[in-house]
Length: 208
Image 1 (cartoon, rainbow, N blue to C red):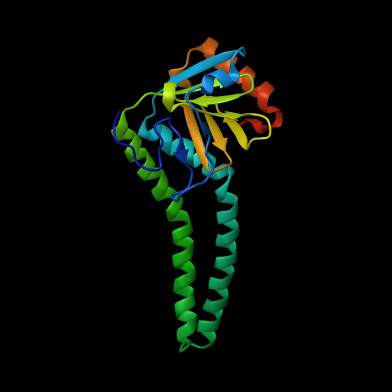
Image 2 (spheres, helix red, strand yellow):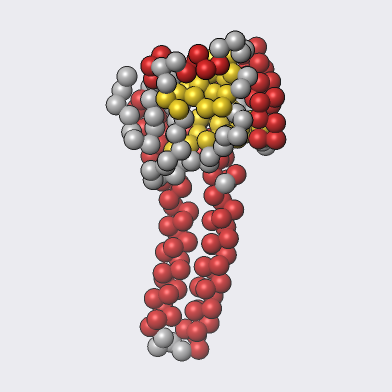
């Protein structure tokens, strides 16, 4: 197995932001035994750079983009106010500085998620690894054997966004799994989706 970027776990977890996160699935070599007797569907998949970029972009639009637009609007108002101040007083050095600062912050809040998508995509493209995510009636298991980790559906921060070409699993909006449709046969896909709908209820989202 290739050496991993810290933002990508050996089980296929991708951080949604370029900083350390605290949410972890429970690591246990007997992870599958936790769901013994339940129906289980294993999804084996690989990821391309384009799929990582698209998956992260879709997730960011569902989460941080609303916040970014609010910040952009507020900073835009500040920019306009100081532009008016500069027009009234061309010698207003503080106004010039704050105009430039507001534009710089706007650029930063949009460049940060873009650069994160690009960096994660580049890392995945170099890894060429195959991941496994097992869907159970009551939870998820990521990985295999002693590297496996699990999380229950009930009372846990799991959301799933279902697209025609991929499933995006959100763990507390801090980590995600991206499972491409191309890697899974029809029967396994339909079975997995059925268990996710039953297990997550309103936390399963049909996305467009």
